[in-house]
Length: 386
Image 1 (cartoon, rainbow, N blue to C red):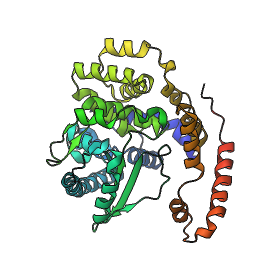
Image 2 (image 1 turned 90 degrees about the vertical axis):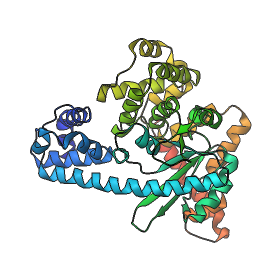
Image 3 (image 1 turned 45 degrees about the vertical axis):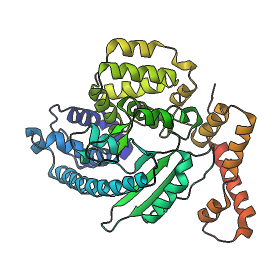
């Protein structure tokens, strides 16, 4: 019943979201409880409720929206306002600690964008805060995060399976803080060198409003990452806040910066991935792009790019990612190490995952992991990498 209702009202929902987020008149047209529920669920999952309030609250259309919907949007906006202030204070403390240890760190994704391109920081919620570091600094980063009472998330580590480390804590106000430290821009091998730390560091700039130690990606690199991230880690998800990031980045950039971004995407062989992100942002929000440059960008042979395979199917999951990583790694030695890191994570990871301290059980735990992984691998829809 719910599935049929969603299908029948998807266009109305999409039009309402799209028009509102472009600042167009957006009166409420369906007074059913089902549509209210669908709208609240969708807008919350896409992290756009504060933006909706920003565009609507002083318009006559706002009063046509159901009271329950308005109250939920106001409540989420107020929560994000408070959370943004608390996260900002915590981030400034951590950045100062990193600076004292001479650890260069570059902010990425949502948090810096909320200060750089959004009218107010709370309009761009961030579940976690991402920083780009050099791998040699990871040990010192772990010490700092421990000092600040963060707990490392148990995850598979290695030179090929993962290029990030996550730390979490909950503060005295009940706000959850999560920090992802990346030493490569993305975990999938085909994207991992799309932006190196040296390239990012050379072009990084300050972030007004986040203190003297804050630095972030330049706009060109931020746009590249915005296009890559939604494909590399989320199967080209049309999450609206990510597409809105793209809209505001393009709006902020000069024509020369756009051309620089297009040249960089072409050089890094992620042209097709970036073109899709730009196109979706345009479909949803009318994102304005230089026609001549975009036309040339579109008509180059994107199919020759290894990264373009990520656009051909949303299916495949574990199997797809494994096979694409395997294919991308250049040598048999690297492929072997990737396989071993995947099948045999560290003993510490295994003991934490299965909530035991007994190392005697490790052979059984590895066997259990191997069988479960093999079943998942075989059950996945086959995915052609050619």
